[in-house]
Image (tube, rainbow, N blue to C red):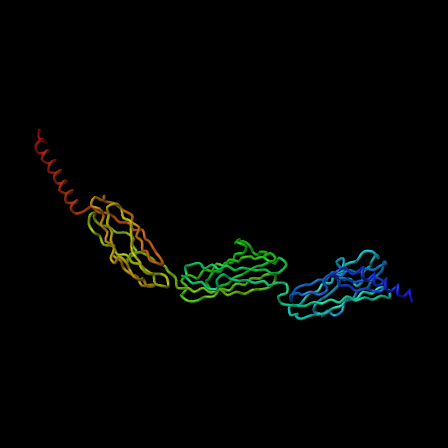
Length: 384
């Protein structure tokens, strides 16, 4: 009777000795134990989970291992030394570790209970394990744009910034692609480098994606969508970005004949017609002509300001050009500008200053005087 009690006390003392605080274990009467530090875990669907299981005996022994309770789709297996294992050898002193790897399917949910069984000689022990599958167990990954809609002219460039937030415990690789309507350009830049194809977002960190959207030439006013797909750690995040085009703004400046040259006398007004054409798709407002003329020249315009230039409706402006009275005959270059609130245009114009009528008469008179003087001299002194 005393011997049985003594054996019972020794068995209890041995069990307490091999059960470290916070470690789940199974104990056989002959000293076989299976232990793991984290027997009950919560994971996200579509991830991999692992248990490290320590196998220990009081004497050297071969311990057979088996797993039950894991769904076939989980591909659960015991690994050691780079192999799938069904048994381990112990030396009676140190524990031998094996790893239970589990691939959690993307559609998994709820709680799954499994059991690892160890057998050595006539002893059998079991180690219960529990896996809870929860969508947000390992932290979320989010991709958030600073703006989902921008508005402006078709000639503008629209920039959206996307922020990747990685709340998971491991670093993740990310990529992104963009696509817009026909004729549009969508450029995606990762990590601030235009040449980068992929980037890494640190665990519990953030990363940025810059998306630059350029509208097609002469895109009509209206809303357009650009599609961006960010892939983070194998998970895709489709994002729709909207651009509200108010129209394109563009001006062209020329003359009715497309000939950018003219002529006139110095000191007198010469009228030159210019045409302002809106080659965009939206009105250009508050258009005014201007020029920086040579010194002492005067140029004014009629009308001075045009309230609105509609698309493809040319507007004629008269430039009254007055060269200075002492301008030397020859060619002068003037740059005319049409400046609107939304767009502008310029044209280089060559103006040729001609000799004035008064000047021509004076020159003619002087020539006649010189010829008459020479004739008089010849008549008076030619016979001597």
